[in-house]
Length: 519
Image (tube, rainbow, N blue to C red):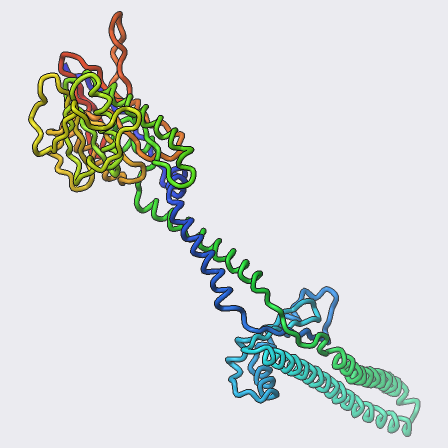
């Protein structure tokens, strides 16, 4: 009889998992910390090795004919733009007798509007004396240019008003002549015409007087604007503080390096797609996380954390020993990105298991990782008289009577998958968080299913300390009802050891059928 259970509906995964991204960026803190430090050092070095050039500033009071109290600063902005013209730059260079080109000189100074009528001129040069002289020449050239434009505008306005007044005077002469001619004729016949002529003469006289006053005001107002436009703050040097410049440049470099490092870490995490959370690793491998082992502490705080790591390693050994002890099938530890840690776990586990019976440890790791592995911590010395270590090529097909067989191997890229069956039919995957990509974890799960190797669970190496996700898969086959005297089902993918053959449940990997069959 075949039972078919429909698989639960798949939920669409988000395009970008922010939690995984944050964890991945935090795990790459060495990268962005290093870049921030490099930016800090480079910023400070630039301030020391390349100090700012000598700088001089001058302040000019600028008067405008259209000054208004509510001016938003457009007039002073126009003056700052006029300061950046080749005309003023050439006049200043000519006054200094410098052979430099105005186009190049423009790049060495700038104008800033402090208020509606105050313009600050900043000039940089090779020496302090040159900076002061150029600032003075620029200020004088700007004042002269501004005064010249005021006078030209006043003269043009006065000339226009005077010409208009002269035209009106010519019209007034014609009106006066008409009045004289009309007065010599018959007064009775010309009375209405005389009234019109007298009205025109009065209007023309008024307009002539108005234009004359406006022309006079245009000429009178110019000296006031010319006298008001002047240098109010003589050119002076700006004293640069080296410590302040170094601190500013170092802070800017630190921020830029930090931002660049975080951006690179984020982009690398998205492109690499290496799962770091328990739930993602368990989902991609199709097996639950049994236990985990934190990173080996280093640095000045290593002694404070060594006890915590040793206790975690002892708990890990005890957990795996319960999975291995009493089983008839060989259990193998398969590493992914954690060969040294897997070798140490295997030695600890062998030292714990040999208390009950002799252990045959089959070494299938590449190189000599098992020989370089750290000795067992708190459970034994790693190898002894009751532990036999052999390479996978020289391992016997079956252990001696009363001897427990334990194997270690690898599922890293380049693994010969068909050789894994010779290591064992039950496996514990020892995976370093953030090492393998999601595609490779799927590959490992598929190969385990195709080789008919039962995955007991996953041991997570170097997990994120702030990871609070659940690494247990709950979508397995339904547990049988518990009866009297029946032992409880073992969790996290470890099936109970029965005498009858149990169905093999394959891992949930891509392109598999959506239905699961149990025969």
